[in-house]
Image (cartoon, rainbow, N blue to C red; front, side):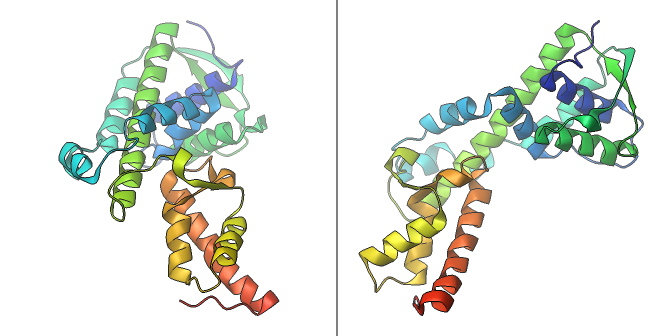
Length: 247
């Protein structure tokens, strides 16, 4: 047995393990965002996301509907339930006292907050950590990556399905127009065609554009934020420049 408290990844694993094997203050399932947080913390997020996305480059609508019906999409909730049960089968030793809240990393903060919510631990108080074997640590990481991969696959399937509602072939990100900010895209679309409507701009924002400042977000959330930003741009240009984009 050995402690993993000397690395950010180790701290994250400890917090998740403690949350799932403690007495439990409330009945709460691990949020999917926690698994994505670990992928980002470990540097695996972008690699896994690209691997998943490559499977759908240039896929046709007919092939997608035939090979990936919604009922075949990953059941992430079942995987998370199994993960929690597996953690409770691990052996452990009581280890050291740690103050996780002293760490500034946003992903560790998220894991710490989940631990507090799940167990009723008072935020800021010291924690008596548990130490599991290296073998079980590896199992834990493998399960987290498998669940994270399933979440990314489901998000990608949703993205492809949305895209194919209006197109016959799925266009990967490389074929989308890239912008830093939504306002940049809105101005370009307007300058290219001053008769463009709000509906047309919103369509291009959601399905024809890629925004680097939203690259860290899940696809669904990024699209939502981009749409909200575009609607705010409509209001801003009307107020500041007198330009009213027709609906």
